[in-house]
Amino acid sequence: MKVAVIGAGSWGTALAQTLALNGHNVSLWARKDSVVHGINHEHVNPRYLSDAKLSDNIVATTSYRDALHRAKAAVIVTPSNLLRGVARVLSDVVDDQFPIVICSKGVEAESGYLPVGVFESELGNRDRLAVLSGPNHAEEVIKAKPAGTVIASSGQDTAVMFRDLFASPTFRTYTSDDVTGVELCAAFKNVIAIAVGVAYGLGYGDNTAAMLMTRGLAEMSRLTVKCGGQAITCMGLAGAGDLIATCTSEHSRNRSFGVELAQGGTLDGYRERTHMVVEGALACKTLKTLSEAYNVELPITDVVRGVVWEGADPKAAAKDLFARPLTTEFYGL
Ligand SMILES: NC(=O)c1ccc[n+]([C@@H]2O[C@H](COP(=O)([O-])OP(=O)(O)OC[C@H]3O[C@@H](n4cnc5c(N)ncnc54)[C@H](O)[C@@H]3O)[C@@H](O)[C@H]2O)c1
Ligand SMILES: O=P(O)(O)OC[C@H](O)CO
Image 1 (tube, rainbow, N blue to C red):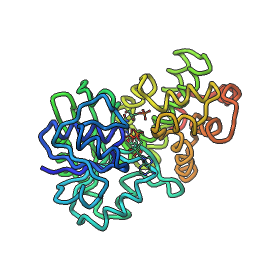
Image 2: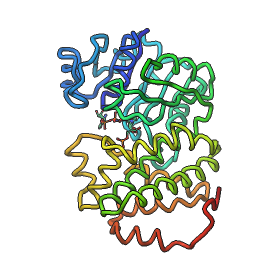
Image 3: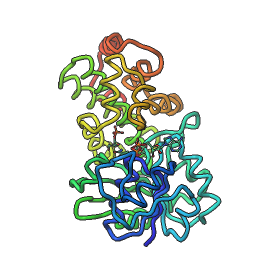
Image 4: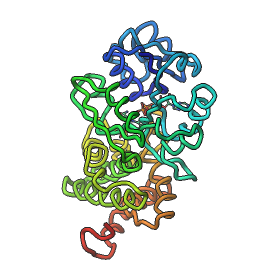
């Protein structure tokens, strides 16, 4: 079957390869001609994961229409801040039954919409929309190192369809009906990974990292439940699983950005050097819309926002976190 993958960064490239190895014909939309040329002529993405030889049943294009022509499903893997634009393009090309899975991790600025909500508002029919998320560093998935992920949809047929599309001997896919929970976990874990990176950058230890991860999980759970998601989702692959992978992995951009930030680096400098997206830097701002709407305290997220965007001193910010009133461990849950 032909599948359109929209976005040829690291994750789009790894997912395209996963689908291609499963025998599907993949049409990969890329922004840059040089990427299209590299994939179609050398079977290599010259900009992302350039060590990987890609299957020859991946064909790249810069045309959305060509990518979607005769495709039976679309996989959306752009940075989260571009999702509404992509949804608008798709609304001119696909009908309201066309299955779409979104693999980007974030919250829309201003509206506070999660990815599936953004697509639903532009394209309708939520039941054919899904979200895919889990502890999935592209650098490992493209090498077929075993990994698991969750595919959540309000439509059971959609979740099962994408589960079977992606499942492989090394990529184990689970279904869920908790779309909100999976999406919030995905956005949140990146913010906590920045906090963990900052802590390591300041020379703090593994105890600090474990505390931030666990208290981050508490923030994630509080907001998830208030937004209508299930607390148990935060204990699954999309929650604790991805939080652990992102906060501990050498591959994580969010974590390594946090380390650099603590040592005087900047977001612009990180982006320019790597050409990569640091979703947590945006999410620490966009999650505020939800925390205010639902009146949920997110102290670690607030501190990360202060350090990334408001010039707060990381050491002073860490001190502030410790100066908060002492309370019971499961306060607010
Ligand atoms: N990399 C991973 O391991 C991984 C795993 C799971 C989920 N994700 C998520 O997938 C999404 C995409 O991340 P990625 O890692 O594939 O990207 P990346 O960081 O490897 O590359 C950046 C991507 O952004 C695109 N881009 C940048 N500016 C653009 C613009 N103005 N217009 C259009 N495209 C632009 C680039 O073309 C490229 O595709 C993110 O939400 C990320 O959180 C990534
Ligand atoms: O490299 P990061 O920090 O963007 O994380 C990538 C994936 O989301 C890990 O599951």
